[in-house]
Amino acid sequence: MAQIVQLAAEPREGRRKTAAKALRMSGKVPAVLYGHGKETRAITIGGVQFERLLEVITPASTIVELGLGGQPVKALIREIQRHPLYPGIVHVDFQEVLAGEKVRLEIPVHLTGIPEGVRNQGGVLDQVLRTVQVEVLPADIPEHVELDVTPLLIGKSLHVSDLRIPNVTILNDAALTVATVVAPRIEEVAVAAAAAPVEGEAGAAAPEAVAEPEVIKKGKVEEAEEGAEE
Image: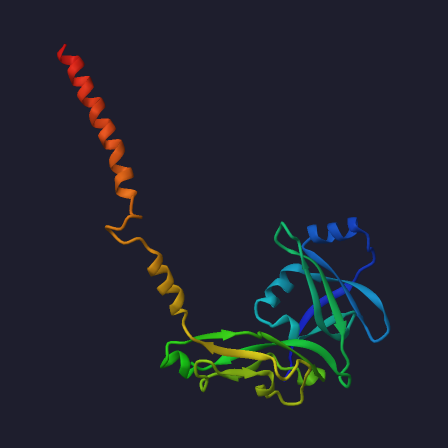
């Protein structure tokens, strides 16, 4: 079931950079609402309210009900623009959705369980695909899809074809790997150990290099003592 949250919004008149900057200074965020062949509408949302909302939702798969003049509009968050240097949101794009019209979006893939190859064979779990693109009716949008990786042994993988999402069409190639268990990289450790110098070998010249300044220093001390005796 799709998650639906409410967000206050209001129409926005000015679209110039100076007007948008003034909005941000007042704690608001400029945004646009588009979709279904309608003219793109410029709107404004509360910056603090939207930031708090992002902390508890999955933006790409959550329906936001925008309150515009008493006529709520259901929409998806399509893009969030942030300033490259300073904290804060610069602009947000919303796409209006209708109950009977399918939409395309990405939903996260959550792995569950501990693979047998990790638990008993010392392998490492690698999640290759973290989101999948789907086509679905707004009411059926899932927050995420879960994939149980418990049976995986070293060298084995799970693919897009192993995902099960009710009332959803997955658009990714079914053969794409979602998760796999790989063997630990013991070879790299062995190579590093073999490359380390062994005490007593010809290549281990570091101690002599350290000892040389001590000999020089000792000579200078002896010369200084002889000068003092004179």
